[in-house]
Image (cartoon, rainbow, N blue to C red; front, side):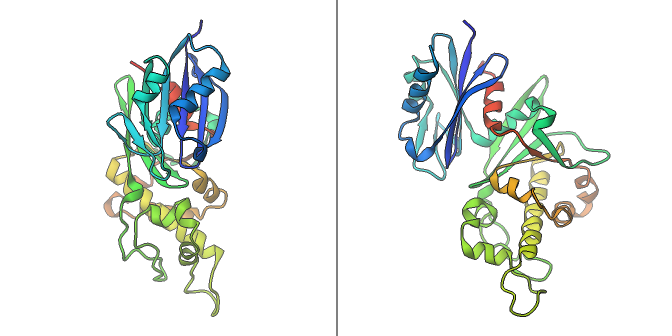
Length: 298
């Protein structure tokens, strides 16, 4: 029988589970609310029992929204703990790989087809090097993909919890941020009225104007540009920035690209190099599953 693996992406809002064959094809995908899950091992065992025999199951690859420590992940935005050992035991001690969710998305980059990526900015002479995945969704996360000879290595990081400077302001002096990145431009942050009001404040508007959609888009774009540019410099991600996540997708429908690029490139002597960094959007609906399908088990 043809070997296959279970691939599973556990986010703060939804759990996505699918089968991946040896050709890295994703089939039988289901999406369930994370709040319904109290044991991921039981969740996955139930899925496996419904899709067919596990005789040729080679293992389970899991991505989860939180840092991996001692073979486990405690979700950052949901009270669920995932144990690789528990999942392995539920499948007769088969191999289980447990990754941070953005680490899995980074693994997808070499496997993405042209129609699964959209260019946001394509420089005439793009740089090469490590690539950075940036997720702006319920939270804010990132991971780096580095070429290592004939293979790849993905490195998870937690930039969403980096503190922003209290003096970070728009051109008109409006204070944009005084907390962490995730406190400012994630889905969790934008669910708060005070965050939206702050980013939508326009000191140059007519008297009595409390909120401006144009100002919000400009300020959000500039703030995201500054953050992404800083991450490129910190990580050496000259090979490009790849956006994913629901908030990023919404922003990219009508981005203020001049504001984003001005802030992204405003890095002093590094500005000419920043202008050569490719910026893209991942269009594939479940990139973490694609990355988990490509992940080596050995």
